[in-house]
Image 1 (cartoon, helix red, strand yellow):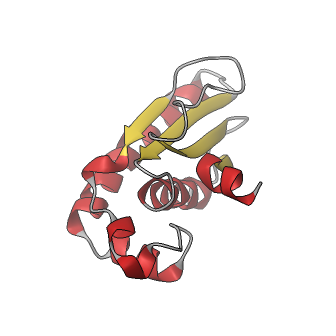
Image 2: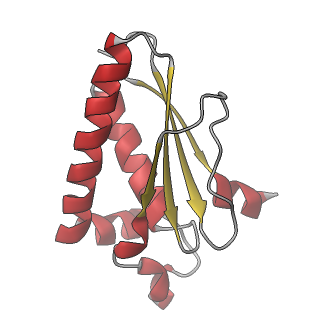
Length: 135
């Protein structure tokens, strides 16, 4: 479906990181603020895990407002993918931020990546805050 288009998806923390710049030099792209979503990080059971964790994923997947948010994100990004592909673009950046950059933004980034990969779109994904924690 996406021809030569590659979607760069990144999660980050509004507290610890700057809004990520497009590493491909085109500027722009989408930045989605996940702070409006319920925060599993406030639950002590999730304090030491992140949005890659099965229980965190189940928590967020079970929330209707998260599903509604992702529905709208998917629709916007799908429109951009179709337009960019038709116009021969090679890159699109999509960033997700939340307070700590560990739960909601990671979950949303992973969800979008899975959605796009199911449609045959090439994806590159990074979780900036999680990467910094591993350093």
